[in-house]
Length: 115
Image 1 (cartoon, rainbow, N blue to C red):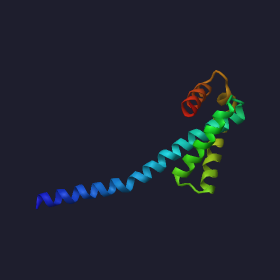
Image 2: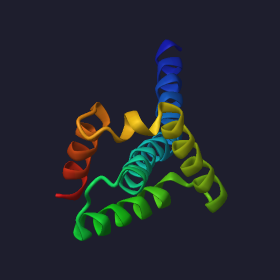
Image 3: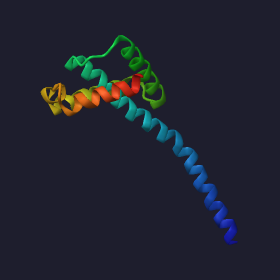
Image 4: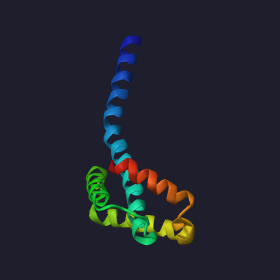
């Protein structure tokens, strides 16, 4: 009897894990999308440098993250606006400071994502 309940428990755990995997993958894609949107907005608003090839790779990465996130067009736009609002709340002067924390992070993330 105890072996049966343990087996049922293991099956239940396996089913939950299988169902949770797509949700976790979609959330990971949304986190990636947040980062990529922040990179794109920073390049635009701060004038941070981005080579043409890097912009192309970034665009493809955004498309892939959008696809994997499961967000529809309206939700993706809402996420983009929330990133923009968040950057504005941080203060563009701080965000765009050439020797600031985000400028360093920007360069590192851009290099890691586009090389």
